[in-house]
Amino acid sequence: MLYRWTRELHLYFGLFVSPFLLLFGVSVFFLNHAKVAVDRWTSVDTVRDVRVPASLELLRGREAVDRAREMLPQLGVTGEIGFTRVVTATRHFVFPVSRPGMETTVDLDLDARSAVVSRRATSVLEAFAYLHKMPGPHNVALRGNWVWTQGWRWFADATVYLTMFLTLSGIYLWYAIKAERRIGLAMAAAGAVTFFGLIYAVIS
Amino acid sequence: MPSSANASTGAKRRPNLETWNRKIHYYLGLFFLFFLWLFSLTGLLLNHGQWRLAAAANARTETRFERGIEPPAGEDDLARARDVMRQLGLTGEIELPAAAQAQGRFDFSVNRPKDASQVKVDLSTKRASVQHFQNSGWAVFRIFHTFSGSRFNAPGSHRDWILTSAWTLAMDALSAGLVVIVLGSYYMWFRFKRKNLALGIAVLAAGYACCALFLQSMWP
Image (cartoon, rainbow over all chains, first blue to last red; front, side):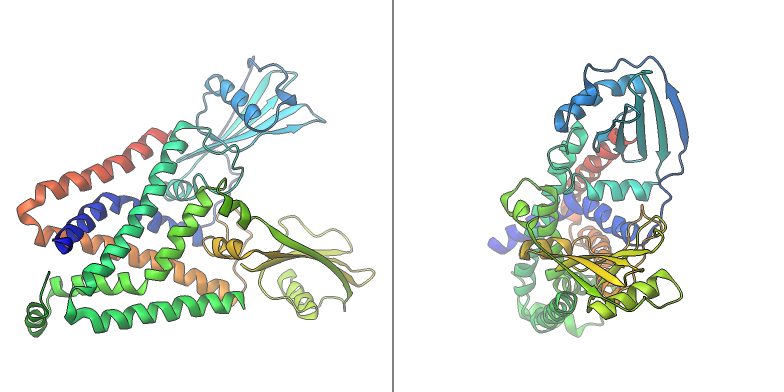
């Protein structure tokens, strides 16, 4: 009974999470080997008469991000705001906005109330890599300021929990097949030696 | 539960695609078990910087020292950085600054999962100033997730330490293995679950629909 249920759950949880595993797996090749010129913009537009929230240059952290988000519809931009930066000398307010398929930088002149919006369209693989890295470890207090990033965090976590279940249930299912135990143990041992050997070499 | 007799009988038959596919599914899964656990758990830590454990991983010990060195020798900045590292007894992945070096200075950083050093050489006084960061155990664990020595959005960054290349190869192998395991599982499911194919199709479609929903909604 336990074997049957484990096998069924292994199968159906595995099928559900499989597209996410493919996305995370394929994007690793991009993250490890691709090179992208991030300063080659696809388009650069100027938007005038931007309604700028009061005292925007004085705000910091999440509050600044929230106020910057209010301006996005005027600029025709949507996505996750990475951070905000005030260039005091020139009174410019700069922030990047990213989403799979598009990287945007907004450079707002606070006095002229005009914004230069620079866009860079990304490839599908770079979009996968973006999802792979989201929400990520940086600017924790700001991250998840776009509803889709918040949602994606749930699915990224679910992928991890389901992967843990699949590995543990997979061990149980393999161990139940006596004829496969010897070679399976050899493979697990070979994997362990490779894994701990590499870790040891890198940190020693 | 399958009996060993059944499995043995199956083993005596000439192995076909189904048998090999099943064996590859087990064996790859078992070989990459520890790698999968590492990347899964570090993925959680990376996604939850607010967790106490993840915050603890940010703690690192800083030390500084200065030492006199011979002028760095070599044909390019990478060779010169290696020469300075040899003199200072440092090891790891070299990261050169994106901008050109200032006149009379030679700066770079050296990174490994367990530590990082920022090296600033004053060529006129022949002195190297080193800011050394020792990472905590949890930080070392977490860094392995991203330790590739190359960033796709920094075209100037390249792997130059053999152990980074070895670890990157392991990451690539895990990813390729994962793709094979997933595609192989589709085949296994299709072959062995024909009586209840509709449920599998529904679950698989739900997974792809969730993925597609995010991509479509987030895509410009």
